[in-house]
Amino acid sequence: MPNRSVTPQERLIVPLDVASFREARTLVDKIPQVTFWKVGLELFVSSGPDILSYLKDNDKRIFLDLKFHDIPNTMAGACRAAGRYGVDLITVHATAGADALQAVCEAAQEGAVAASQTLPQLIAVTVLTSISPRSLALDLKIPLELSDYALQMALLSQQAGLAGSVCSPQEAELLRRCCGNDWLLVCPGVRPTWAQKGDQQRTMTPKHAIAAGADYLVIGRPITQAQDPAEAFRRICDELIE
Image 1 (cartoon, rainbow, N blue to C red):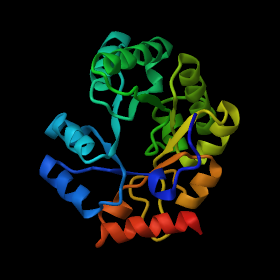
Image 2: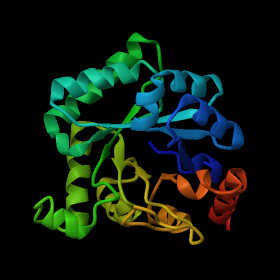
Image 3: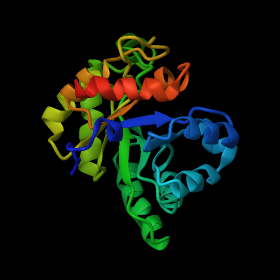
């Protein structure tokens, strides 16, 4: 069950969206207050599991955001391997379908148990926050409102046994209402009022996202590209307290 008594500092997941292990280590050192880091495709392809070992050695929580999307057998193999790293969250795409979603749950647990690691939580991407309602309809030819489609992907993932969803904060309230309080919601596309939204199409402020039902907020560039990243992180934490 998601723990909603966590502090603002513990709610914030900061992406290590850098190209090398050296850059990642420098960023972690700049913001020692961050307890939860996201490792995505670029850094993992560049550094491999070394970055995960480094974060664990420094008592950090890890969101392994590789967004697996393939046939069920391939996804299961990837999640089995990922489960051995002792990470906290692993992402897959809900659009891979029910068979794949069921397979990854079992596989990740198998990998963790085999490596004597704690069980990771698998969360499914519903709709990427870079996708607008227009692109969903015109480019992907999906004849549903974006919020309805996100809900369908969340319900599919819940039925398959996953722990939660990655969703825009604009869909968080709907998913919280329909999927229940035990469903974990991780929201990128969160921007404080003083930051640019970048390539995110569906954004919300941190305080509003938490009020909408988000458990964790993924906030990158407003922190990592700030002149003083530690101060930017502190400022967002303070906004959540006010």
